[in-house]
Image 1 (cartoon, helix red, strand yellow):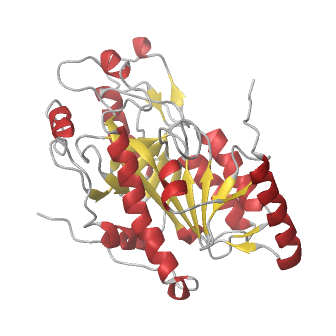
Image 2: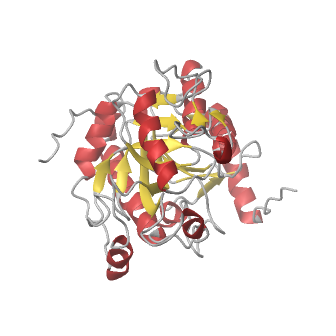
Image 3: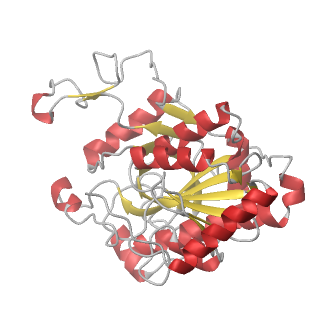
Length: 357
């Protein structure tokens, strides 16, 4: 049975005041929407999840109850909103749709920034890094047979829909299979935040030393890389190898698998539908994920042994990743809000930064 905590009477009074203001003034213009996925307790004052730093540090003190969604939304007086979707694609899709259709808010010029933690591929990114995506690929749409029945010449038992073999060509992405984000906006966000200092520690260095990925031993940094969104939490070297093929397969070789998360195809599907309805601008969407753990086991452990250690709040870089998601994401939020006259009507853009040799 699902239960929801009752809102304090003070927040209900704020909500009533907000409703009265809406009736008199019309929809509230929203400039930036920060999308968080989970919180471990209250919105403030306890152990943090993805929402808490935004609420506390950006003073998101205006609470708007949203019974049709997972959680109330929060705003400050600068036009910044934070949404908590709940975990998994179903929670995310339904919450974003409820928020986007709410007549109290005007999202016509709003920028949307998904900011959360993720698993990371140690061949591409390091623990504690923050990664901007150009592609988000669904990892749930497909056929699957049990691993014990996979033919010997197959690399995986997970197949694209309507295909007979793993990675059979030509690729035929289904609706909702792959989302192409505004790459020039993502490049702009990366260039703006690439020099953001991210925390490292002896603990993270020690953890990284047990992984053999080419990027695993690097200190945390801001990076570009693409995401698999899957409500199924996968783990292990063989699943990592599947993901490294799944992303380029569905993006025509353009995407590079770097992170794995659980909600973003649900979020993007709702934003796409809302854009069709004229409620939002699909070109104003960014996805930022910070690496709290690796998607495969360290040297010396089996996938099952490693998976047993994977729990929210106990990930190897849980707190550093929360900090990275806020610090890097806030760099973009701050720029947009401080120069709103420039960005309200014109979406920032940049060309890709050449890769370092």
